[in-house]
Length: 228
Image 1 (tube, rainbow, N blue to C red):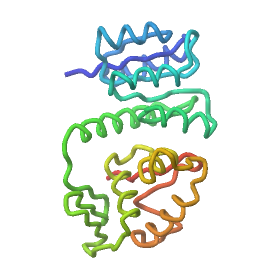
Image 2: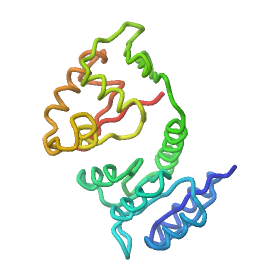
Image 3: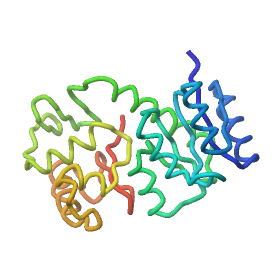
């Protein structure tokens, strides 16, 4: 079945470029130039993915994203000219599945779309294990191994690894991880305790902790688990 992608973009040139890239790759395309139109298209056509610009004429894209996340789990890939860490963190914290900055290349955009679809499929099933390279985590047994050798993690360290590994390839912001590990009242502006724990985790699971292979850093934003 051909997947439907809704492009929410008010700039004609960018809209044309996105339509050309996705159309050539075989996607069925829907378009909306503002937030209200986007909501109607989602309700009536039920797209499989949304490409969302943040600079819409009637509503800020982050506010629209927040509203969407209250009633739909459809994957959302933000495609925006806003490139600051603050903008990326805000969009990801409000439920974006990924963030790509303009200008972008066709191969990168299509790769991000495929990755988001893969993560969405995985999230629909109960996964007992995750592996990448020599790294393996058994969620049921709560056991982490590297090259078949068990790794001794503290309870907090394991919770961090599991949270990131549950959605490989997806960026988990510092704030999201802190809230989910230390609770909703934790100080999300101070990520020192998270960084200390990540340093310990990498020392235990990485061959070279300064050049990690498994848990990667998105500078100023958060962490993501590598994918095979």
